[in-house]
Image (cartoon, rainbow, N blue to C red; front, side, top):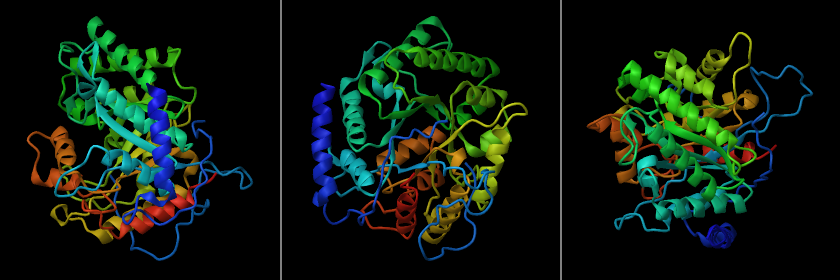
Length: 408
């Protein structure tokens, strides 16, 4: 079955990349994907938008000691979100969005799914959901790109456990259910899978949980990580982690956050410049990235590779955002990234389009219940295009960066 999906997606991809997508597609961007693995929030806008292409050379402050050392590869991607018409989102629109991202020069993609969307019960996978993920995976594999899969056992403040997975996280039956999640993951994904994250902004769940619940979650995650590492079908380049907000990692309010980061092969971090009330914050990407790196660097060991799996700034005026602020944020971020390439092997900007509405409302609801209007606006305006497909000012910044980081 996976071979059928692969052939279908690659054929479709070839047609779309040759120009079949039509009017709303991005301009041609030269891309040079390679097979390098790269393995070895808060923040904000600074300055004002400047003209010209992004300079991805190692200018400014850098970790590189030897100026003759090879330039570290950064696989830059863009989260695929479909345009939405009055009729809603058609079944093929999500795949089309992924192919549009590839056509813009993305070298890595990202897919999101909750555990309770992938399993009806601990041993009952939802085959249609997995088949959709396999179709997307085959498109990235066919394009020579990599993929990040956020298959969340915890989605922000919510435990995303399927029906029948209850009680202590580290109960034997729940550990078995976690192993089944890994089994299905390695059945439907192949060598394109570069990063597997078991959660998004898990710091929100930890903040509202008891000490016992946090310790049980740590035990569950460690068990699943170990099972995945030893799995015979594990993709050779796979790194495993679980996602947190940048500010939570830096602030370190709970020991379990650092324990879970240390349990992974990589630190998986979202970097979205928002206050606790979901208003756009004003900080400096350069200092934020340095603070994150300094926090993760131990006295006796270097910091792990840091995967930035969502980098965004909302443009909605309802959260004190704007298109100009969004553009300035990406401009400052990509300049900071260019001098810190070796720290961040994979970076995914968010997102291609705003919405769809149902998706961003669900994301906001996972962050707080019930979701505030500010939370909804913050999640619904992270695209570099409006929901209708109309480009925002930041689109050119992101496309320039995709070209600038297209090699090595």
